[in-house]
Each structure stands twice: as C-alpha cells, then as structure tokens.
Image (cartoon, rainbow, N blue to C red):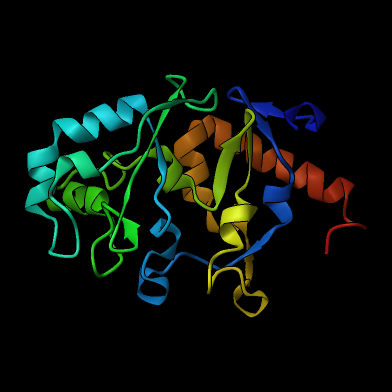
Length: 199
C-alpha cells in the first residue's frame, strides 16, 4: 500500500486521504463516551511495559466498571512492524470496553497524567492518541475500518471537518513541529493540485 504514496515525512508515508476524509470537528467524549475505545487498542511493547510499571497508580484511579486484575489487562504479544519495537500488545476488553476506559468514557491513562499534572498523553499509547488516524504498512492513513463501527463520528451529518483539521494536534505530536509544518505545506500543494477532484 505505502509504495503508492509519494510523500514521506519523518519516515512515514503520507496517505493524502487524511486531507480529504470527512470527520467530526473534534472528539467529544461527552457525546460518544469514548466509543473508539470499546474495542481495545494495540500498544507497543515499550508502552505495555511502562503501563505495567505504573499498575498501582493506574488501579488507584480506576472505578468499579474496570478490572484491577492486572493479568486481565493485556492480550498476548505479537509481531507487528508498524510498532517501534516490532511487538504489539493489545489491551483486553472488560465490561464491553477497553480495560482502561472508565464508566464516563475517559481513559484512565490520560486521566492519571492530568491528575498528576503531567502532559495529558504522557502514558497513553500512540495508537489511542492518533485515532481515527493509524499507522499501517508504514503510512499515516485513516482507520476507516474502525471508524465505520462508530455511531456518531462516522455519520455524514456530523462530519463538518476533515481528519487533518480535527487531528492537527495529534499529527504534530507524532511528527513534531517541523514535520507537521512540512505536512501542512504538502497538504496545501496536494489540495491545489487536486482541486478539481476534491470536494
């Protein structure tokens, strides 16, 4: 798939679909209750190990809709070249949602960072941060298969933005300021070049 993409930034191929794919203006947990987390997520092995090293702190902020049994938090590791370590570890589901999602739809990993006055995404797995973006076969693209399962953000009447516009902060987090600036310039070039096709 990635061989068909022309632009590479910070080692990632760029799928121009991120510039045109429609999405909600911004994520709102109060509307969706963290629905994108209902199916769990894959973590890099390093993220998985970091989460386990903080298990006591995480348990402290969990509610009774979550399991404090650490052995039920993760699936078996598997090889995946799209992850930095080459190993992906999926989170398990509990009560029909990711083990780290509380009853209000908030991620416990993000919640504890904010409670401890750390950067909000310090402990959160990259693939959680990026949704509805995904890194697949070395390319930054749209996780359309996952997005299709959503009850709110996949509805045309709610899609008043593009994924690029809605996820600018996430893209800058991934690529850094210089990489995001390069991506922004590429977007302008792409949209200008394809103005007749882009609606």
